[in-house]
Image (tube, rainbow, N blue to C red):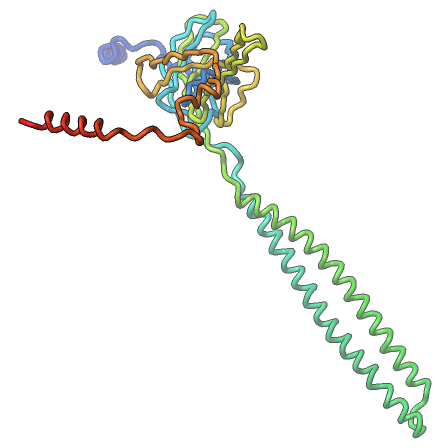
Length: 343
């Protein structure tokens, strides 16, 4: 009894504050968000895209993944934000490269095996056709050589006509069988050729297959109060631009000017912007934060110059040349030049 009490006291000394049960780490809930584009701001050289997803959250730690975003988005520009009834703390995000699409290796292996089988079958049919062609040639030669021999033997009474008839019937029947067999082989080879064409087309498609590169954005967050939450991911992407276009129309009486401005958007991002709120901005994010200089445009009514006034300063083709200076005038001019050049 004393030994048991001493052992119990030793255990209590070695582990004085041992808890009743060790705490377990909080499990991370991983959710793949169903997101869509909700807003786009187009700049002269890029676009700022916002994707949103609605989530119903309960308290806990989450990893929300926005998958299959465009591969050419600017990684450094990715930001996340949100709003809703749930109390959420956003901890950060990451941008990871990924590929979508099933690997075609198994499909490629199956097609190659099918191609080899069809080629072997076609080769076997070709060998049969070649053998039948030789047999047909021999039968045709035998039939052609039998006619002169038959005439000689019948003339010498060395052969009976019935025997030669049986021989000729045999040769003709064999020729017919050979021709029929060759025809069946041709039909079989045409079917094999069609199958090989289909398989080769599928092989070309599979061999040219490339998996699509995308980017996935996992976002870590903690939820302290349950509720709905709209999570946004915003990123910049190239391949989009806009340019202004203007149209001015003067009324018939010249007293009113109708002015219309358009924004021409071009985008090759691979995304669908249908039914999305699109804004146009003249800012250039890559050029710094200074505002651009906007020049003044002065509009005035164009007045055509009358033709008579336009050419009034030009001498006409038939006008006489100007009179030559007189000798006295030339002498006065020379004296004036000498006086100016004297020291």
